[in-house]
Length: 437
Ligand code: SAH
Ligand code: SF4
Ligand code: F3S
Image (cartoon, rainbow, N blue to C red; front, side):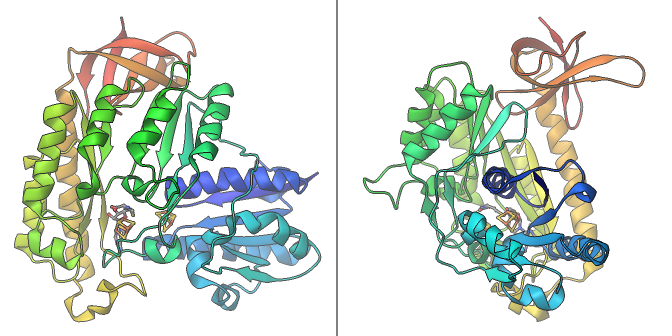
């Protein structure tokens, strides 16, 4: 059998796509290569969210292009978000690429592989999605199974490329999702994470109309001991029904990822986000008042075009005021084709952006530590994800609480996949320490 290696960049959606590609390629006679050097086909599954991630994709492919000189039979595939956006222009920058596979054409892979094996060079990036087929999924081993429930975005935040790389919002059929969840659970996975750029939009396009709360209840009803998570929520789309569902469904975890992007009202408007600080705060307060021990995490961008020092400081203030438990942070990166990228006269100098990002990160660390300290002395259920013997000989298991806090626990043996009750003994910035009860 031939071998394929996939290098995945970007978000969980891309990681999930890679598991699907491995599955489809198995049917085409390819097994998974451990090392890229051993592969007959190399796939870079790209991310386009920032310029840095796009550059990384091209530099990866540059390295592989050189390998092809000594191994002309090597097939190189450029997939993912940069591929969807770049289309056949990718060939200009990387002439050694055999196949450009846009995100919308993922399920066309088996047909295309046959054609490139016969020597064709193809760019498939039509915006009409290639219809999903029932495929095998080769999941990365572990405790958590990612299941996409919807793809795409209709929001067009002015900085963001995703609506152009993932297309318009589309929901997957519930019966497919539920079957995938059952299969993953039967394979031993202990956690299902439902994925989507805006999970709250789930079901709006389905016939009959469905929603995320309904889907969560369906999955919650599957027998067995497991957890359910969902990402990402758009702040103003979170409904009372969803909050009720989280409270009432025993398997659905107390965790919301609600990107805020900025704590400044003017900047939020310029970003085309449909809320202000007051509204976002109301949403957080409401969730916290109803869901016990809930973790709320967020995303923030530093140095959006035109952002003043004062506006940036409003973001820092919001992070503490809202008691956010953790935030992903990034310096603004102009993405060609988006609205904000055109506001060149408002760009913030690189050094100011990096300085703001550093302060954002420092502030995030402080918020995380404050959040973690809340749990010292508490008893919590942990799903074990890992076992390691450290250099000093200490044996440690690591897992997550329902509210997504990482816990390190001294323990003699590997009990990955088990749920245990732990007492939290100490809090660090990024994790908690605990002991088995
Ligand atoms: N759907 C999610 C976010 C998906 S993109 C939402 O609505 O928030 C993931 C994160 O990347 C975003 O939350 C944003 O913080 C960051 N991001 C997106 N475009 C960016 C850009 N041009 N520069 C820097 N960060 C960006
Ligand atoms: Fe991007 Fe905004 Fe859509 Fe999120 S909601 S994917 S940030 S356009
Ligand atoms: Fe990147 Fe595409 Fe995800 S741009 S963040 S891989 S949706």
